[in-house]
Length: 336
Ligand code: AHR
Image 1 (cartoon, rainbow, N blue to C red):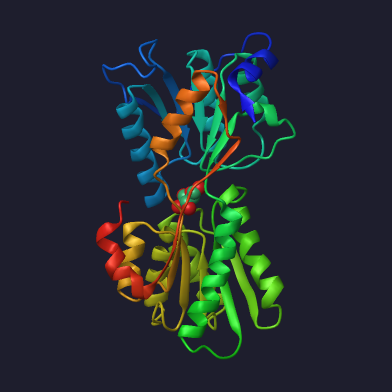
Image 2 (tube, protein in one colour):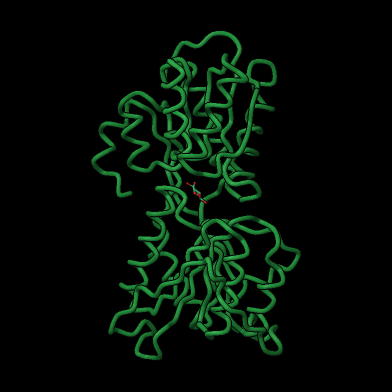
């Protein structure tokens, strides 16, 4: 566990300031007249978002903006359009603006040490949200709040067992995997967790015959699935790392004259409304939920960090698993 005081003590010198890359979009949201600091100075939070690649991301952005507003913080928000260099520029800009706390959802896992050292030098604590990073220096961030993606991959594997059984599937399981953004934590870890289940229990009967990134987008899922179907027309399972790619893939499956959810069984991750609609129509067989509504918990954490309180190093999001028969009932209650 690391608190802000430890973090600040460890920090020395002054940060190098950088401008925000021209292509990253920055806006200010969440500002309101109440202060967010228990009567003290209003907290300014710099949030560097990945982009707007998926329904999940849209819901996450809304949640962060609304929660910052409710908490009375000044929010400086930037959309990196899925480019690491834009996120790095945004973080440098927040350092230059001397925000109180920086939070960001890293587009990929590697390559953050230099900019996070600059934040540390400037004595600005950093919180990771949604996605983790790889670093040899754990003092570069105070806490990481988000899902356990490896476990989501395992849950997807277990869910496929159930779905195959329900479908009465016999014979070889030829899996196409639509990966998330290359090098991103959810892509690496969802693949890893799923493979764990395959290696443990399905070495002989399951095979990933094709696997490629669709960059977490609907267009990517559509395009890559069309190519998969050309090269491997006998695929009978799709494991998509998010709903948006599954929804894009469904378009290609139907264009190829096949039935999504029947000829090709589909498991995806997220649980966005459109995913639930497709599941209630029988086109997706199961969804592993990944909760994007991190805003309120993040704002509590920001307050604690800003107040110098000790915070938990890792805060995991709670989420569920959904099969087709639950989709219709669950749909009206979906919040994103
Ligand atoms: O990091 C979370 C992932 O990023 C979501 O599963 C995906 O939809 C998003 O783009």
